Length: 262
Image (cartoon, rainbow, N blue to C red; front, side):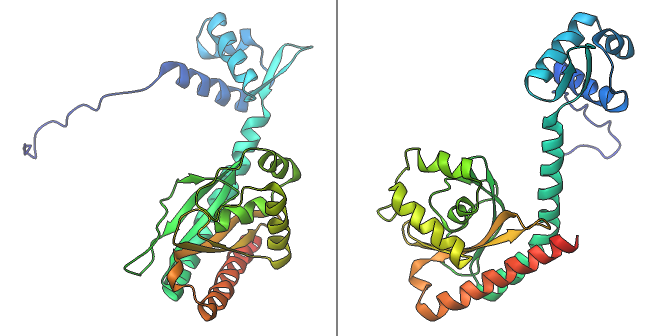
């Protein structure tokens, strides 16, 4: 149906959840006025003390609010600091990485993926589709395992000991006949990845696919992401393999340098 240009716009339906809005208002109020108690917060916000208390208790249990038990006052919790750190890290990556990824895609013709770790999962943060007629394409937002795949296994190799232990002691799912599911064998491969400074994965996550990944570092020298190219295994002959390794490592270094310079 075509609407007349002068007709009134249709009113947009609101899906706002009032309890969520109130919780966010509590956080904003504590950001501006740290050290308030439940009574003072209820007066500032025009809500009953029982509602504010339930909101504070929920936010405290989830780490978004901290309660000083001696004085019964509240301040922002550690979870907000973690979220702020995450926004800063991924925000910088999303600003710096895409132009370099475009260059890498144009140079190799292969799919290019920027992958980060979320707990015990790998997350494709940004992707660039390759130029070949036959390609292996991962969508942004796709989650996968840490023990299979080029960038995923690279991130596992550089993960802190607690993450390594969690993955190595869990049941390792087999995705293809080439997926490594033996913890001892996987540990040896992770050591080799760290020694080489890159990872080449063949057919371990998707049959007929390769992935070559290199680490991206922040200014503190920590690995915060993996950059990879991926495509059909039939294209990965020895000369191209060496060229791709150099190309991915060079692009990852370029992103790391831009992040360091800030």
